[in-house]
Image 1 (cartoon, rainbow, N blue to C red):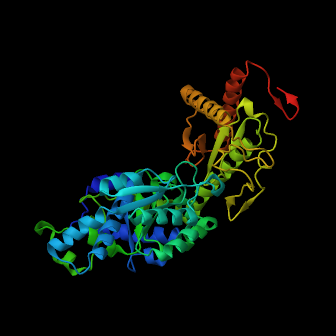
Image 2 (image 1 turned 45 degrees about the vertical axis):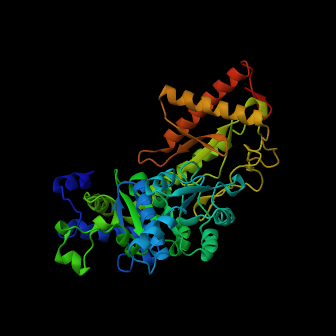
Image 3 (image 1 turned 30 degrees about the vertical axis):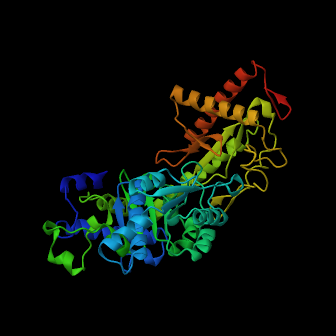
Length: 463
């Protein structure tokens, strides 16, 4: 907040180096610090051909790189052409362009495609893949586009999807795209990217050197107030060549020399705020160890909450493996009976710092499974699914209407889910335990009403 106050006091326009050199230089420096902290490949640093820029949101970042990807694709398709012939070719190719993302990608990709004037197609994600985009799914979509005469030019991959915090299979995606080198690949890690400050999550960046851009929001999980969305580009020339327009009133010798950075060419707006200052304050105040402790504490209490949910298998089911301090659950309807063995419980401990869940079976989207239980038959009956959705939604809405805590919900592959995340600076174990108690009380209230007031049996005990 102190950095925000100083930034507001400076009120610098910051659209190019000559009008705000300190703003520009500090942004370059702190984003290189952040890139190293997140274990991004060296190609994303300003000392090479890449670099970082601070945007207002991940949606703005997605739109910006999508425009750059579109222009890169069009320039390559029209190479050697000039004048009207080039414009006609551009129009022809543009009509075939399609941006891709998974069904679980944030809606900003579809919205970006709408603004950029291109088609959008989503790639199906299966429950057995924990709702992650796979290489096989991407390959099938690329084949479909080819058959339809479409030209994929851009792909959003995700680390930590909005609904369930799923992480796409980056290695598989990289392998598939070896045959499609012209597709711009963007990694949307708006929320979960903050976890990369911890070594146990840094294996996710292993394949990023093969991708074109990466974005994470410090204002979501890294102790920075809104807005501070950090976009990193592997080849900054791809961005600046697409977005650089220099009228006479912006021309100056420093920009013309090519030795300074003009961030107006890295974004859609012209002017910008001194957001680098608050990032500098955060990094210098908390330090690397403080940021790591912040993330690990939230993951730890998130795992505690998941354990509580697993312990009440008669009331709840964990739908997808918990990730990045998020637990996704549904309420077990009366008609499904007692779920005595939910997944054999979460495996004790962690591997590489990430909660591992024994989900050897189940989670098929084809039969709309609601169960993670070992040996328990998944709910394939449409009526049962509808009842489960109705019950879960009623519990969710009743809790929010009472106002003690507020939850979020989503629908994934036809399943209504409740989301509980512990990634708040003020989050403590006692608050998560209270939230769990409220979930239990409300679920029992709703289920008792559905059951005409009859008591429910849990492990042979009626209560």
